[in-house]
Image 1: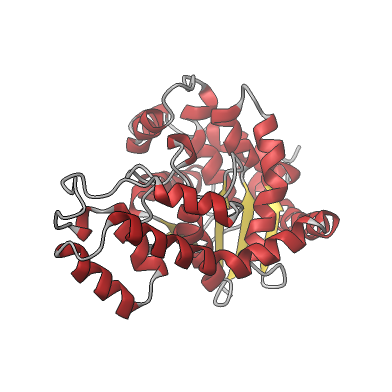
Image 2: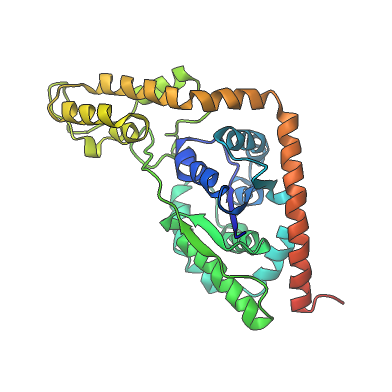
Length: 327
């Protein structure tokens, strides 16, 4: 069976963007591939090194959310990056052969700096982030990596590193291919991309009253200043979420009524909040149950990490032999 690898940085709570942009896709992939999903805690240190307690406090809840969404440890291997020390060794060895220019020219480097304004990111770890990412992927000889279009440059660096390793030593790693993921647009409460960094997220753990309050605060069509003004659903973040959580018939009705000022933003938000809470209710029920059984969750992750270590250990034997590091 072909192998897929993907990870997530434990830097806070899981929000709707993660759910629809990543986790629902993971849930489908586990039915067709041998999947390795991991908590990228070392990656999280690139931006959270001043307060690593954020990482520690996020890891357990992140796995709880994965399981609540339907990621199945019987179908996918779940592990913590730092529990598989071979990642650090392969990262070190690959860093020896990766030209600095590849990292400096990486277009996502400056984009991430912009998104994470306010953090001191002038570190080797942040610049070398793609090398650690390459080590993660190549360690498991993953044929596929689910990515969005904005992440393609990182994956291309991984492919270049795999080719360079083969040129300098011998071929150990397959060149991973992108599984481009189609995900719905999930705007935050301020209309920008939903992100913890922007403080505009609705989290899976938010109770109904918090979700309702956040939806009530969402930005809408800036040109609709009065209830009697016709709206433009195509520029409204509330309507973008209706596309995910509201049935097709009701969605068409809301769009029509919005355009002719037949429904106001307050009522539109009230409908969205109810539909969103109903959508999340089964997931939150599972989540609450798992939060009361964290020992079981940790055991699942420990077993997954042991499976990941077995694969990583075998890969590193090949790498050391190829590089002549066997004296």
